[in-house]
Length: 330
Image (cartoon, rainbow, N blue to C red; front, top):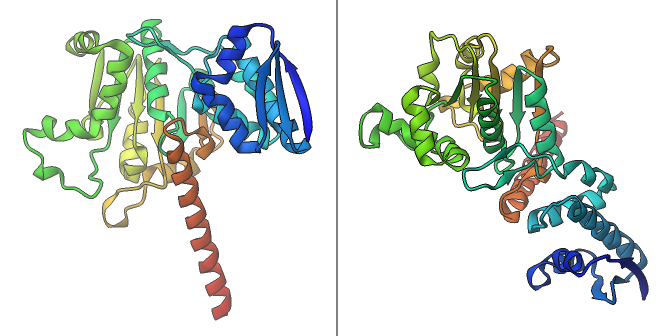
């Protein structure tokens, strides 16, 4: 049995490392089949040599986050484990301390993964940012946080959030109410993010002033959007014509963020996605950034990450099977 020891300066540091009911350490023990105990100002890790070495690297990464004032959660413990398994744990240091926005309840919003950090940096540095990746990677939430920050710092005068009103297997006409009430369910994730950042009362006050607008994409036609932070969400469901229309709304002193997941296209009759096309057309254009998220950037329940990986594996197997069948016919 191999063993390594890590010195711990303070008891509260050890308590934060282990987590409530030792939940953080249990994740490490399960991942590497090691035993981790704290005693006399040390953390002792025992098991097979290679497993102990990796577990120690995870513990040191978590201690580095604690030193920089980060709270440990299941998500960032699992993320550190993933980085160690890829040999990239030194990148953990870059995650700490980068607060984007404070919510209405005083909670700081920070990038939780390297992909999220690249995304936020790209939004700061470019006029147009295209974020593409699976569900649960924080594309919408972080974009809204960046928009609220720009608005609070008076970099822009308006926040405009929009989505294409495309049915995901259900018909819009069956929903009750007028047009605005019919499209409201499609815009709900945008409302939720804004309520979280601003609080419902402040949000309503800004809406009444015209400082915040949440509307379907069709409402953007014919407008020029100056001094605005504009977010297009669920962009995979835009047609090619809608995407061109949206991009050409860009006015002076404005910034655009375009988000989508090209694996979840709901366009009817196999329509061609404007997001997929624009990624090809605008690739490499100055002042336009593209950020691709992966399953490693998922910050929802861990099963969401596992589901996305399973679908990726399934699609890859299906593609490879198609290639093999084509080769056999030849």
